[in-house]
Length: 481
Image (tube, rainbow, N blue to C red):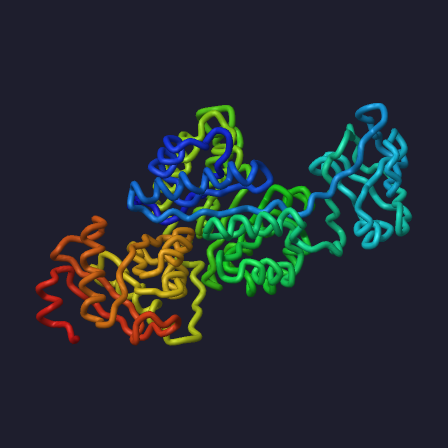
């Protein structure tokens, strides 16, 4: 489906968006990727949503990417004997392994791995950081703390441990079961929670075994510190600002977001900016001005995608939220300042023949009257390299692999078109011209740039660039076999 913008929109599905009619309306309003949150819903419910998405894809003849977001380990305190307790600044509070219901002085924290990693001076954040505890002394089964920021603590509130790397795998037993289930369904991307280091990604990659691309969520300080290594072994990145803003001072998050987006772009790997982008639209048909500015900043930074969470999953105005993102993106990308920023932040990456060809394709398209860059790609690598260049013209990704087409939906500026197996370059150029005309990107009198690799259908062989007419008669009369 042709969009009037280059950045992609990810919409989370949930109770407010579970029917065929709503999912189709969200796609038509601008959602390119649908996120299935594995923290909510049974396997039967997830399977039903997956089935509906694929039906919408078939009915509209428009590739749609499906992102399954794994829950990750959840660290929570135990229960309290007499209900919620009010912790005040300066008081002492103990966390331990004793399963006895807690009181104003202590509560169970049933995670021995946390005590193994804690050191005096470390901080524990409870209930999304509303309560902050400083560890004074600790052992294998306890931590005696001082309340630094008070508040009400109650049953099973979440705990964040920002100051240490926890000896926990990113995948819980639930995650492993969920991973196998969604891979058997045929999702395109797996979002991995609780990533702290590169080896966390490898475990998920081995279990997925090529059935889905791996997208690492950056939501912990340890992941920020190890980001280069994590990026290298990931297929994509999500800047998950919710937990990141809990575990780090909130003022640290915007510069981190900018750095991570630029690194992802340099590596030609898609990056999603997520969490609380249009939070007020859960209950309001209109966003705040600050939210619009936040969405705009992510677009100006050159992100591949921006994401809606509860706004589309459980909000009262899911279609309006998608439409708002779409409208903001169209307006920002039409601003001359946007092009200035995108081009000023382009980092030259020239390590291969393919790098040189896609850079040349972008330069030719921007210095002559070219309507689109058509790249034939088997694995999707060539298309992501073209996307990294952030060209002014549309990127038509031509592939015979439906798996590749769906994964590329997440990449900035790409429009994915299925094509049959090819053996001759002339036929590739003809197919590119037809797809460009059919998609409304060019007319018969226009020209396009075509990149491909010969021999065909072998990943990593991009070695041809051709400026071609959209008029098939001219192609047949002038192009070599």
